[in-house]
Length: 310
Picture 1 (cartoon, rainbow, N blue to C red):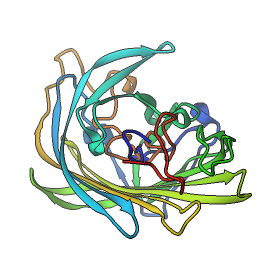
Picture 2 (cartoon, helix red, strand yellow):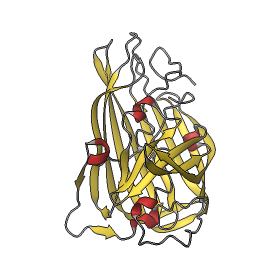
Picture 3 (cartoon, rainbow, N blue to C red):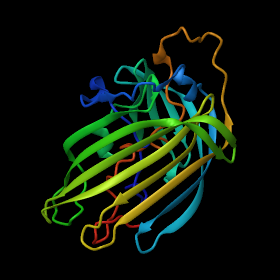
Picture 4 (cartoon, rainbow, N blue to C red):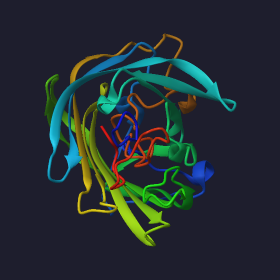
């Protein structure tokens, strides 16, 4: 957890991996007659200095008592960095999901957009990156498996027996359709709707049981704008009582400023020069995904029921 909250990813949601990234990727194309979007990178602008301001709401708590809070998050393309020899774009968010500031790292190549982690990040996330969150070309309808990993270190003792739990993680992404979406910044026709789902199976050593958590996300991206809205729901099961934990996060675009590409850049240049305009971990898709991870921060105190304290 981060700051007493279930930490996100989008998933992200949040999304996907290819064989070269995690060894667990596959693609399931849609039926005949599926629509393929040309120049899909137009939906994910990433020029340095571009800025998005989002109005957000988070509702969370045990099933019997859910509280709601409003927040604002500003996302900016900060620059580039090199991670293990790979050049990535850096996206800074002031308050994604009402969790405080963070940086996230992305790279676009011919296969899509690959997520390289975040700062701060969770131990669970670090066992999964890098992984793909969007596949090119964008085709509707279609879906792909993000990852299917077993026996990962959950980095937390949730059942109180002084043994760190292990977990299995499965995630998938579906390209649903193009549709209109309205947010405070306006109405965007033909926005790309993407849905992602992550399932986390936590093996409780003391209780000799398996607790299942889920993270589902729907995100809309507009051409020339990027992420305009996402809705995410996380559910953690009860561990020692009947009280589960639910988190629902929504962010909607209020203002956007997209910087023009430098004159030296053109569509003829390699696709590896660009990345996701808004990160999966904190909005989008991510963040489903294990950028959010349903994992606990090792320093976060837990209640006797295994839930995060506020």
